Image 1 (cartoon, rainbow, N blue to C red):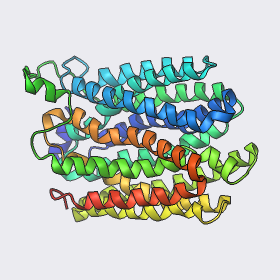
Image 2 (image 1 turned 120 degrees about the vertical axis):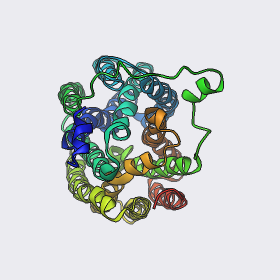
Image 3 (image 1 turned 180 degrees about the vertical axis):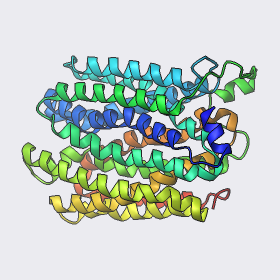
Image 4 (image 1 turned 90 degrees about the horizontal axis):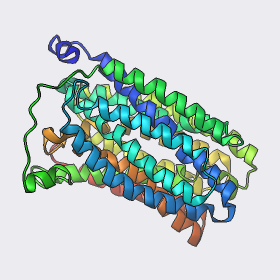
Length: 412
């Protein structure tokens, strides 16, 4: 209610923006910290000789589970009626379930146990992902959509480096790092929900669905203007895949490709993360307001994707830490600009506003799938021709993604 009143007065909805930011950080930082650093470290302890293949296998299974869970849970959120709103119950339940999975992750000692745990974690995580991003479609006034998207984008740019920085401090105490992330998740998620203040929707009428309508409510959209929607989905998938083709193996890049000790790798991971954080947040802050001022979403997203293509190719030049620092500066800037306007672009190409959480969940499934697809591609390249070629491969993926974004017609 407060957000509607704020919008009607023409005031910027700061509570919505900061609520989305904190809610996003609540799941993103713990997830990325564990997924990119602590989980590979745990796998390296259990099966050091098969670590690359196991990470790829785990990513494949997680991709399949996340795809199904994201669509179903997003669709259920769209159709939820409760005294706590349609998004809050799912986000809160997702928080509880991810905490349970994190706790049991500290107890498992086998690869099969990790696979089962991480699959269940993907189900729990996507209870939070799709409903949270739907707040932008539900509550953000159109004239401020770019700026509200920037809050989400700044969170995306904070997530990877901060998660890595925290996790890198716990490479020799993996369980301790997981417990820290659990505490972090509770504080930030609850603070985000409080700020957004999504109230009861008990009076809302939910249309009963039959036949093909019921199928489409829990499936990829096939009606309406879906061309631009799928261009946005696959453009985002390639961008995120290129990013995680590197970050999914960043610990191994420093140790195996650059031949550093674990201590030196930890130090350089921290430096790289600081660079990513500064560059990402700096460009993330300006992206949304620029989009609102010049009414240009597509060109900003495409330009950021091209810039990312240059950044990800740099480490192929020399297997030395300085190349990862340059990569962090260029890619961090690109990710900052991209993430700050990406959600506004996604909302603009939705084929049906009544299925916002489900459809935005599909768009943002590109995040989950990209974090999985990237490591799979990296694993194939590393196993066949070595680490060096993974970097130009990531660059090609970015350029193709930029081409898809430029093909969108509905948005400038």
